[in-house]
Length: 62
Image 1 (tube, rainbow, N blue to C red):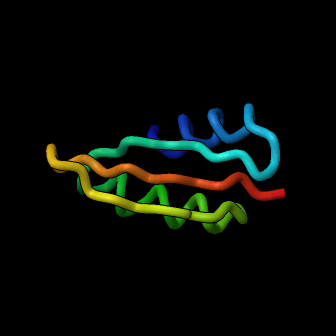
Image 2: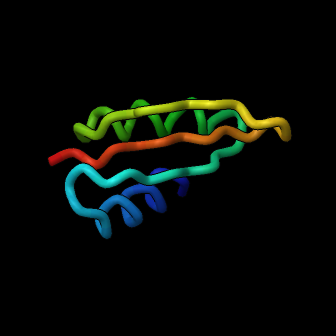
């Protein structure tokens, strides 16, 4: 479901805008970045947070 939520959020943005996602460790962080990149978007930053979750910064493709 994480990728579905990411796609919905990205669809609301204009080209070049940045989306910040907070993802759980494990399958979400293993799957979402690759799927986002396959759709042409750019991963700007991927940072593990103190609580074990991940912050993902995505620039929407043009």
